[in-house]
Image (cartoon, rainbow, N blue to C red; front, side):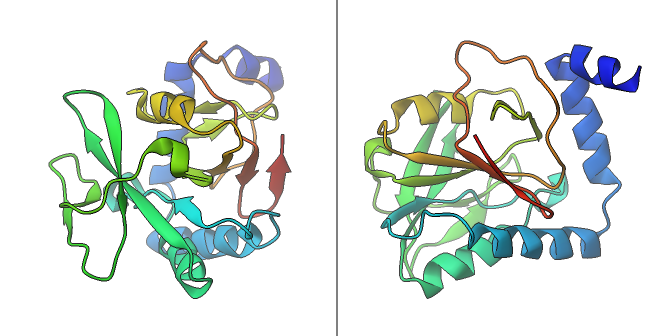
Length: 194
């Protein structure tokens, strides 16, 4: 019975459920689980690339702390590109993170670069994707604004999309025609390959 209810949940219900699950995590839980996710990332066959897109965490939304992944990328001397959201156009702008890149918290609570060298989506090889929930087929649910759906559609066909999740996969979730499936999703307990 419980399994059937999960399958029939729509996106709104899943968003609400996973936002609630996140609120139940303590700050210590978030740090421990985020570190486990970063460590699991080392199992993936993606480290020969150069340009890695990494979202910066919104701590108020109890997102995965991506600083651990950032340190791995820096330690491997990778080019790290971080997003800046344009809420007027609904698009992400992709800025190369450098030593002198100034970050500030936007009015939406998102840490973002103030300015910098902009790169086109087609130049990004590995993209770490935020999400609220995902399923065993690599479909994901985000916050519902479509920023990442539009962005992933603009990427090179050879780009690799990696979701990051505190929680395990759902059996199935609704996906819109815009939804681009993930190639991998990393949780604290396993790596999913799609």
